[in-house]
Amino acid sequence: MEKIIKLFKNIPTGLNFFTGVFCLAILTLIACTKDTNNNNDVYNSIKPKGKKPAWGLSITPQMQTVIETLDTIAPLPLHLLTPEQARLQPSAADAAMRVMHNFNIAALPVNVDTVGREIPVTGGTIHLRIYTPKTGKPIYPVIVYYHGGGWVIATIDTYNSSAQALAEKTGAVLVAVEYRKGPEFKFPTAHNDAFEAYKWTLNNASSIKGDTTKIAVAGESAGGNLAVTVSIMARDSGVHKPIHQLVVYPVASDDPATPSKLLYTTAKPLSTPDLPWFLGHYLNTPVESANPLISLVNANLTGLPKTTIIAAELDPLQTEGKTLSDKLQAAGVNTLYKLYIGVTHEFFGMAAIIPEAKDAQNLAAAQLKKAFQ
Image (cartoon, rainbow, N blue to C red):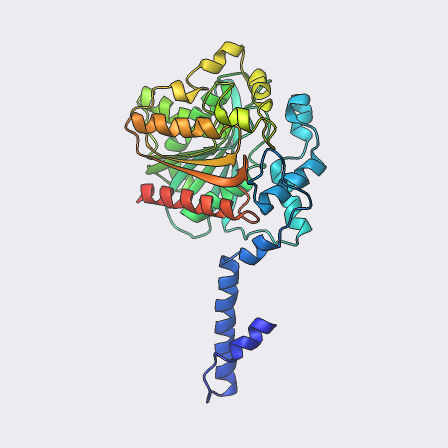
């Protein structure tokens, strides 16, 4: 109410009643728009209850609140669970939604339409969710998106907020891929599904209003790995390559003793002991962890598209994301790397409550839009 009262002072004197009301309505709309675009009040309202964890003394208040909430709804480490149990346990995305509820934070508006498609792949079918901006354009750039979860857990629902944000912020059709996972489907099933979904998108772009001359790949964690491997597979098989790859805290190295794996061993929501658990359920044998499709830092990276890599400080995967960036640049690939301080693995989709996530999404969207131009 105080803000509305102040608006009266901005109305010129000498106006009749109706003109004054009209001016007030316009000023109110402007004020509300500014409030919507500036979430500082919302972010500052989020306060953790306890002390910062020993593994994350730089953690932001918002990120700490998510981790504290996750501890209350998913107290058991993933590596102590079976895959079936891990899939039932609430995720970091669930914790973020709980934080929004606890602090009365409204969900961001949805400005995309979604539709599901089942497509054939070798040995079965997989599901796609297609996000289309509500702008009514006849044709859009395309992003093929791969969710995280270590090739074992999580779904496109878990990562819906990331997919929705990328589609809205880039004005692109986004195809989220529900690839098959281990232990039911072992390596390289998820990688092959990812590539077949990419090829399906190329071959069926007209049916989803997609422009194949403006196609990118994107993914988080294990999905970030898949995005890069799709580019590698496209290059090696002569298929039309993506023009950009967005890679968010990717799985990229089988080295068990990288600096970040040693420093953030007990971090949450991803800890260092979780990593061999994921690989153990997806790989056929431990030696497959050295395969260049898993350990991307050992792959031939020449000729890959321009790349954006987004990393989290408090993440066992931090080092390998930076190493991948360095390897890409050494291979002649134009690469932008951005490390966000004070946040953990899985922060990217939490823009409603974590300011670093909002910045990361805006950076990713800007890089993708530049590529589409």
